[in-house]
Amino acid sequence: MADTFSYREADPDSLLPTWGPLRTHSLVWRPGCDLPALLDAWEARLTGLDDPDTAAIVTLPSHETAGALPLIRRGFAPLTVIAERLAGHSPAPRPSGVSVRAATHADLDIAVELNLHTIRYDAAFGMVTERPNTAEHLRSALAGVLGRDHEAMWLAVHGDTPIGMIYVDMPQDAGWLERFTSARPFAYLGHLGVRPDARGTGAGGALVAHAHAVLDGAGVASTLLHHALPNPRSTPFWYSQGYRPRWTMWVRRPAARTSPGVSYGVSAQPERPSAT
Image (cartoon, rainbow, N blue to C red; front, side, top):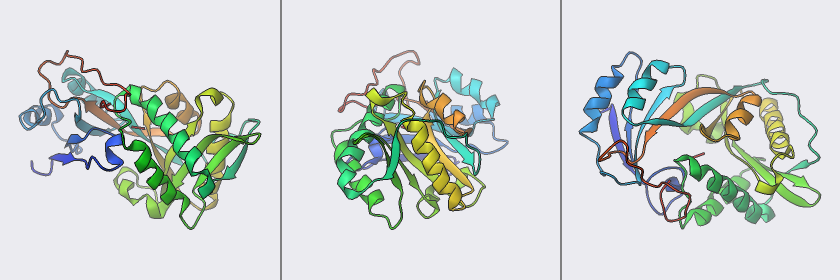
C-alpha cells in the first residue's frame, strides 16, 4: 500500500500553504478499489491529531458517487472540484460595460490585490488560507506570469479602473495536471477574480469569454480549473461557462480528530489555517 498512501509537508516559505494545509495526507483512489477498507487502513497512518493545519484528502472522479457515503461517514466533505471545459463549449458573451486588456508589469500591484480578494473569499470554504507571506509569494508568482513570452493575464477595466483579473497556464505550463484529463493539449485557468464591489457587473463573464477565445484560437482542446464546491458564486458561474465537474477532492481537516463532531474554527484570518 506504499503507493496508495502519501504524506507531504509544504515549505512554509512558499505559496503552496496558501492553497491548502501545511501537512497533507493523501489516499490514491483507483478503479475497483475497496474504498471503505482503504479508509479504515489509512486511519492508523494519519498524524497530527487535532492539528488544524493538517488534512486528509481523497480525490475521486466526480461521477464515482458510490464513494460519497463511506467518506461522509468518516467525516470527509467535498470541498474542491477540478472542472473541465472542452474547446468550443462556451456561452455567447453577454454585454458587460467593461473592456478587457492584457495586463503588463505595471499592473502587478492590482493583480496581487485582486488575487488576494479571491483568496480571502475562498478561505471561508475550508481549504485556502491567507498566510502572513501570501502577498509576497503571490507577487513573485504573478510577476512570473507577466514575464512569459505570450499573453497569459488580462484585466477587466471599467472606465480607467481595473476591476477584475484572469490568468491562464498554456499547455507548456500546465503539465502538472496531466493525470486529470485525457484531452491534449490542455491548459489551466489559474485565477479569475473580480473586486467585491464589482460583482454582478459582468466583468467575470467578459474575462472568461476573452480567455476562452484565446485558448480556442490557440488550438487548446481542454481547459481545467479548480473551484471551491461550497462557494455559492463560483459553482453556478463556472458551469454556466461550459465547465463540468471531473474530479472532486474530499477533505477532512484536521486529518486526525479526537471526535468527528469537534469544530476546529477554520477561518480566513491570516495566521489561522483554512483553495480555489
